[in-house]
Image (cartoon, rainbow, N blue to C red; front, side):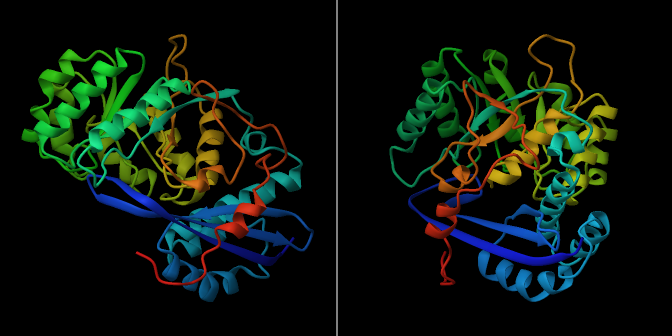
Length: 372
């Protein structure tokens, strides 16, 4: 069963109003879908994240010629080679080849992986809190209020991009509005040092609805995380940009983190991603996947979470939530997969069990022009 054809779908959407986090503002959202088709007619979809001009050129000129004619069953070998050139491209190819394997076996992705242990997975509404407007806090609160009205009971908002005083004012206002109707995670995007984090300690002790503090420090500062974990009354989470299970080992070995947050598009393919999930379970740790940048990668995160053994025996806490982008981004709707009351039901069909919206693929196709 050889790979006969590869289709690429680079997609671009220019945001009418930028939003962002401590790393800066997003002025556009992109998506790069690939479809691998075999000589037997089976196909599989994958997703890659990167700047479209270089990604599209590299994928067409190097990765497609390498893949054509190769056996689709040689997933691990092919991914190992491609990740030497472009790790994120390898992740997308891994998704596509995994779906082809599932279709060949007449199984869903979860059944291919041994069967799901959870029919439904909780998700949390993930926000990019900052805007260029002076009233960014008001707009942020309105978005959070809307998500709660839609049934989300877990939320994540940004800190670290403004002064501590301004961010604390923002979160205080949000807590007053929420009145404990929802649990709240705070994401600093590695923007603090330990002294800055400690300025939040009194508030952390005051608020009983906090889920976790995400990436307050750069992720290579293991001892800093260990110190904060021993001091703060809130779980520490992070790891969205770590590229393999081995990269999490220092944090795990030093007991410096509570919740691992791998991303399906940043690791060693979907198989390497699942290795990180198992690493967490082997050490009795929680894992709440990062999945902000794409609909298909988020779907794979939910599949993997559905196959993951429970982290807890506490009723209602068996499985951790997956990130759900609720900001303006049409590409989150490429695959019809929508939460109800903050919970996703895992699809049952063969392969991923969901068709892509082909009209959207054409409506948002990038025309090759420069954007920024």
